[in-house]
Amino acid sequence: MIKKYFDNYTFWTGILITSLVVANVVAGKVIQIKGIVLPAAVVSYAFTFLCTDVINEKWGKEKATQSVIIGFTTQIFAALLILMAQYLPVAPFASETQEAYKIILGQNWRFVVASLTAYLIAQNVDVKLFDFIKKKTNGKHKWVRNNVSTLTSQLVDTSIFITIAFWGSVPSILVMIFSQYIIKLGLALIDTPIFYLMTKD
Image (cartoon, rainbow, N blue to C red; front, side):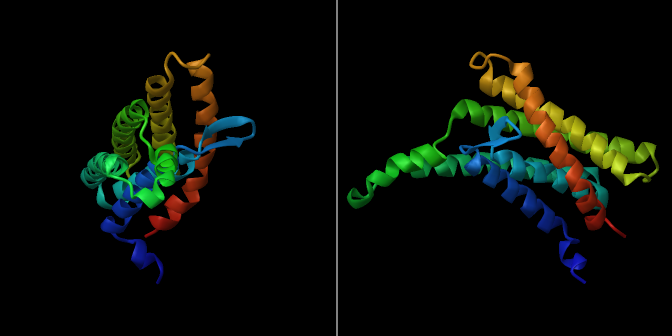
């Protein structure tokens, strides 16, 4: 009964977009998991790969690619709206909120470029690899295509983002990539039962 409400392409594209926008908003918060320091966005961003896998499984490669492009354009639109709001004149009685706004929502454009580039490339890798494995296995072994495509694309995403965002500003790019990927790997494995539930016939 409940599942029929989730069996909808528009719903999953909406979840994808929401996950992306929230990831960009909360990226300024730094968290620590098992000694690994990373942005809070890692949790909400992980949902984007689940979304494209579900869309790919149920509605095919073309629809999944379409959702990726929609997500890309909405990220740009959201970033521009946030930037526009930053430069709108502040009411005199609320001037102290401007600095808080800049701290929480102010855009580091190097990070924005890194995020957009990593997202577009990694998600396309995910969609194409998922579709390739599905065809090679004749639609069997969902866990293989779900995990292999997600784990591969997450590595691509992490490598591109950290290289663009932190090149020249951290002691070791490779250590940073490896550390963040370990957390993303764990999140990717956790989404497998959800993927099975959401794509159950």
